[in-house]
Amino acid sequence: MNRRDAMKKPVFLLLLTVCGLHAEPLAIQITHLNGEPTAAFLLGAEKDGIVISAAPNGGSSYKLPLTNIREMTIDEPKGWSAALQTFASGNYAEAEKLFAQLADEFDKLVPLQDGFGSLARLHQFMSLQKLGRYAVLAKAMDRQLANPLNFGAHYTEDFVDLEGWALMGKKDWRSLGAFIKKFEDANPLKLPQAPFKRLRSSRLAGLCYLRAVWNEEAQKQPELALMDFHRALTLDLGSDLFLVRLAAVSALRLTDTQITATPKDEKLTKQAKSLALVCRDLGGKDALPKDFEKYLK
Image (cartoon, rainbow, N blue to C red; front, side, top):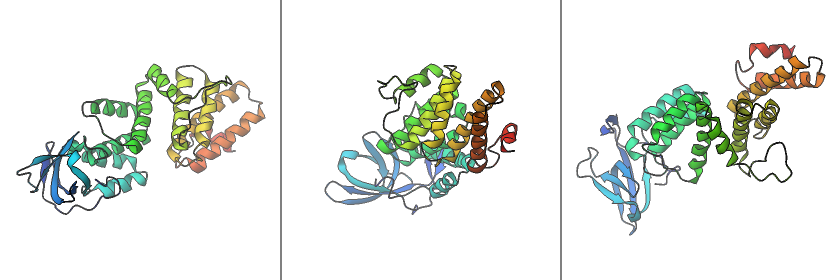
């Protein structure tokens, strides 16, 4: 499949039973190694091949090994573009429902790398993470272990990052600590915290947030946690408003605790005001908790 780039509107609206649910058949265009083209319907997938049929009702289906395919393009499921747009718009509650339904419908396609079965479940998981439903995410990812998702390098990074949030949802601090350390680099200068390896800034921002939570909850080191909450705010230039809100509120909460202990510290008060402004201006509606509105006065 021209996997991510060649997703078209479905050409048939006839219903097919997939995994016990009604789903529209997905038309697939295949180019064999010898250059011969085949138009068919995709019924299922295995690690080494796909199950196709010339008829949308699945009659006379057969397995075609991946080694016999030069290229394939799969038409996108009905509702796929709408689900992606819903996710992109930030309506994660609705996106989670849409992608959960798509993932159930195309569960038989999960073995196909970067196929709609795996991508739908990935987007469902990402929606749960954006909603802050970490415990639900952990349970959903555990259930998926029975039918492992299949991704190339691009999507694998997104899926691996979700594992950290799921561990946080379980409050499995030992495993979360081990997860974080996989991304840390050497620390020859004996800095308070080891630097992370060279990763894209969006991944680093998420890792800083997870390490901050780990330091606060498991290590009982709020000072180190505060450092990473600030890093999570700035590393990706605030491009992820979801993470901005999480990190800013957490940093403000810890700063407020410090102010309670040293109420005359003007530097801390200025920091609290800056964080409150970030929450108000970048975190979205109601991002700033009412208890901290005092710092805007």
